[in-house]
Amino acid sequence: MRDAVSRFVHDGDTVVIEGFTHLICFAAGHEIIRQRRRDLTLARLTPDLIYDQMIAAGCARKLVFSWAGNPGVGSLHAFRRAVEGKSRGGLEIEEYSHFGMVARFSAGAARLPFWPLRNYMGTDLPTANPRIRSVMCPYTGEALATVPALNPGVTIVHAQRADRGGNTQMWGLVGVQKEAAFASERVIVVVEELVDEQVIRSDPNRTVIPGVIVSGVVLEPWGAHPSYAQGYYDRDNDFYVAWESISRDPDKLARYLDEFVYDVPDRAGYMEKQPHLAVRLKAKERLSRGVNYGF
Image 1: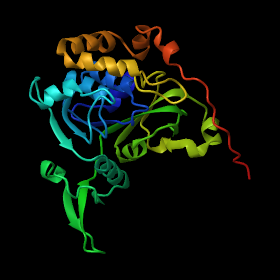
Image 2 (image 1 turned 45 degrees about the vertical axis):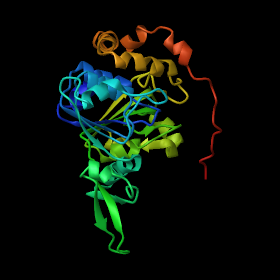
Image 3 (image 1 turned 60 degrees about the vertical axis):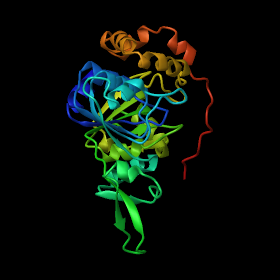
């Protein structure tokens, strides 16, 4: 992880750490914090705790998003302090709907300049965000909203497994990891398990990201904690609840970053500080039925 972040994540980059509740790469965010990257534009549909931590650590200049919060708990208080001007440096924001962000990644992945959509009718988001514009449909004459393509400098995707070539498979709840990866200049894939190419080939429809677009592969078990990796470990709901109190207090948040980010060398060190975590969250076995790819 140290090598991947050093090589592929630069000051001033637009960085995407995607994942919709599931497979959010906290380990990569922590390494970005440890390497003290600055002036980043962070983009994601639903920025949650890891972006709150990166904002608190001073990594971010801007946030491009569609919803921000601690899912099921409350606000992101470092984020709020930055937006409200209550912390040093401030934070620029650029807000869209969920589908607006999906459309931006989709346009970026397709190498189109923009994407048309209908879902801003009757809202004031175009007033709040001048980058949301409109175009006249050449077929129907209808006025459609548009959003510009988003082409990140680097997208970081957590997944269950990949081979050494970067062919990456995931299952369970997925978001826009595929679109964000295809839209990006560089792609870091972080996995729970590195497998032989034949394992990937044995179930090809599960491959979401092909190795041809991957810049680097990182083997990092438990790299998504406190989010979850389906079939490997469960979501740490206790942590999300605890974050409400931690993030409300800048001193508590600074102590958290010191103990669990700056003062550990890597994810293994992070896990060593929490010896009962793996037992408490280990996923139970529930296997899907195999399929016959023969002909």
